[in-house]
Image (tube, rainbow, N blue to C red):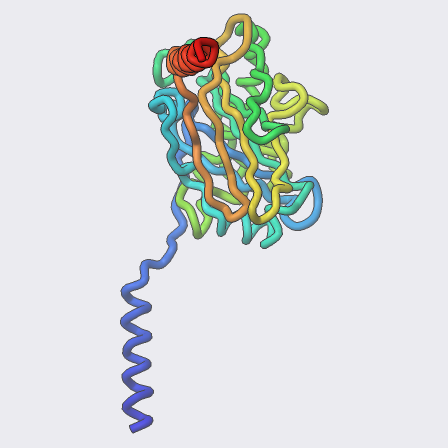
Length: 277
């Protein structure tokens, strides 16, 4: 009886194994206009590893319906745990950010001028929008594009640290563990100039992930078409301490104005009724 039970258990285990899809590494195809989300540690576990995630075309964030929210594509909490440890969400030395560029020779996916940049800025107070990055001339933004481009692929030899052609992690077909010492890695490009991210964003596109298991970190996301004035606010990335994540598109200015006007009219009506009473 025991022998039959063992045989049945063994057959069941084989069936379960065959029915369970195994994680397969993929080759990442990264292109200009894709958003790269990068994680890097300044010390401790994973300090020589950059988790880089190709979030896909910036168009999905540029054109997201106002007020909508969706999961950050390609980001798996299992990668954060395996690279930076189970305590990734309480580390003051673990940072994250997001950037993209249209490149210096072509327009963006929705017709944005060449050398358009997209970059994150961390919220220091949760729920309070960060200060927008300022737009610059093509001459001013060109060096930033030039230093972001090698993270994709600009003809560098294989294994030079670029995301294009890299082998994905076991948990996401769109994320790779890039050696932080390589020329095309997030760490090398982000920190190429001390005190300024990607030779343009002062002080940094990065934010801390020291948020605790029940906390949240947010990165506001801006589009900088060459010119003057503040960049356009597209929305924010949020990462919770349990690893769940999302991107939320901001409401259109007209919608915010309408809501404010409506609230103002309601308040005026309340005051008038009180005054009559």
